Length: 490
Image (cartoon, rainbow, N blue to C red; front, side, top):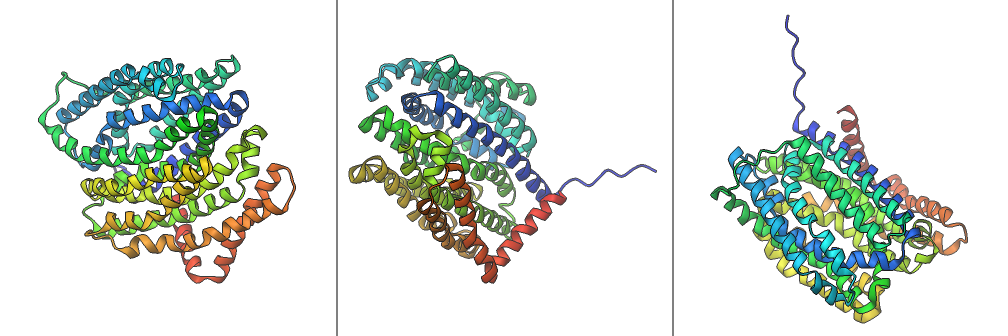
């Protein structure tokens, strides 16, 4: 008798497995990134980080133009033929080549913008990364469409390991800012090599068929939203660098890097899995609504307490991770942590827009909302320098959450209960968690590591009390526990 093949895993099993594998990869990356932050902050000067941040703000903008929203448009489409896929590969490579040349030609202008001649050569060295990423992006998107999250996680971790090694080695040799440039270059080259070897793409003859036009239309709207979002997230570097110089920007960029580290643990794994899964569920309203509600529940109960605690222990945490010479970053980080409450939830708004094929509506909303964030930088700088900038930006980010969800679900089968009920309880608990953690750092004179640990434990107290006293919180905890148990069975 022939043996029966085991049943193929369901979409739910693939989703849970994908989240777990991606989380594992992301946590490994974060440990490496955190380790590199701790080591490099003690080996390099604030000016080194500031100069890289100046160029990175421009390169990142060019990266958005190079992608042109194609990665999101590719994920959203259910089927892509071989000929169309070949055209998309050539289109992405062509965009990468064009942007590489434009950035290289703009190197003297970038140096003149900041009044720092050394930025010209740094820009020239980093510009080829745009072509490399133009080749890598569709290959990585293909793996994401196929839900091959284990391979993606391995590539991410190994790329980070080599990049960190290159940066620390360069810093030990006294390369200064060039050790950070080497970190970017080594990672890009290694990722390209591995993706070409594992995906084995067939480019075909160099032609771009008319079938790519719908991708450009949908991708153009996604690109417009991403461009505005990028400006809102990076004009701060230009403002701080231009008004206050590379040293202050170095303090600001390290504080922002500490903010991004926990954000990447939440946004990265869930976004990588959520977009392809939600796109498959776009014609199944009930399953879609259950998935988005469960995702928001996990995001809210993980991210909001984490950032509330980080804000409370900001000063000892910065001293512990970066050293006493970086105390100026602590107050900036504490204020940026408020934005950390909003950013994971804002990512879920993006999932809704893209997976429901509402990229054009997302662009219209971004045209109205993102200028408010950009304006908050100038208002904050005028009110209180770099700390004022961080505070006003963070408060504006939180205030925009309600209108962003409203425009994302308006006219769709997703209702307010699906997006509001999962997040309202942890959102109300976040201020109590912050006050509990902050009180510890204000009332104790202990080593930094002890204050961080005690502040973290104190932040758990409001959560524990809420679980003991409030039945709705217990129901949320039971739902999250059920999710974890399903994940273990998978």
